[in-house]
Image (tube, rainbow, N blue to C red):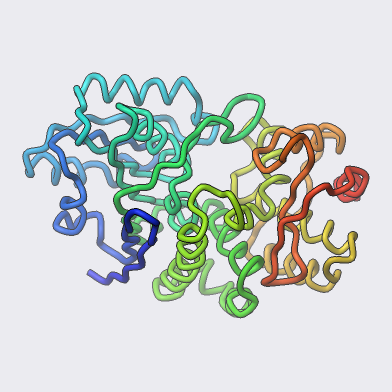
Length: 360
């Protein structure tokens, strides 16, 4: 087993992020994070056939009382109805306060499973076992859990930190190429907002990243998670600069809502959103067009979309952006940049400028 470990240091406790290969089959690694006898494993129909059987076998052989909830895949399943199913599964398991939820899957599974754990008996343990690159570098770390509404993405949720994150890169071998690229959008984000050196490293390693070279993928995950862990340690509940992690997300979430969580993957929407945010920054003379072009070029090389999909007016997208969680008192609050590696929170942006970027 090849493994490296980072930690998220919070005010009251810390938890590990284990990154490596063969981690899910190493039950001695993750069983100690489960305090009670009752365990609910939540997964989806794409992931469960590959990775649920060994998890279930390890739990059963350890004498745990195990429940399973296997959902259809996709963002469109991250609903209040599926959340209710998760709570019902915990009730059928007769889960106590020391029960644990295991999230075995991508960001949708992690968000929904974490929210169920946050709400059951006002909060029980959960362990993240992310199986997509996007979940490994972003959604599994930091404790944001939520479900979507037709009116907007992630509008109902809670901050609830996992006991541990077990990021087994072996699972990326079954990940479709489109999903891999979607995860790389979130990797690019860390370079774009915090670390120009990491951004340049990504520019130099696009071929290896797309080819899934283990050492390059592990390096990308570790560097991404370290950036996120640092921010979460400073600002666990997004009262300050944790909002910087939402670079591209106000535009991106509006696109996901407009397309009814169907045609765009989250990372693809974020890719388009980051470039829109960069172009808006240049329009407001906060950054250069050169940096926007450099971002667009990297996203294209990673096989990500950079153009707005048709069928939605700029006015409608702006309306959806107003409902975004990052807006305050009805005023748009966006994450823009001063150039690669230098993101900032900007309030009271004239809507005419936003519309101009959406029309371009």
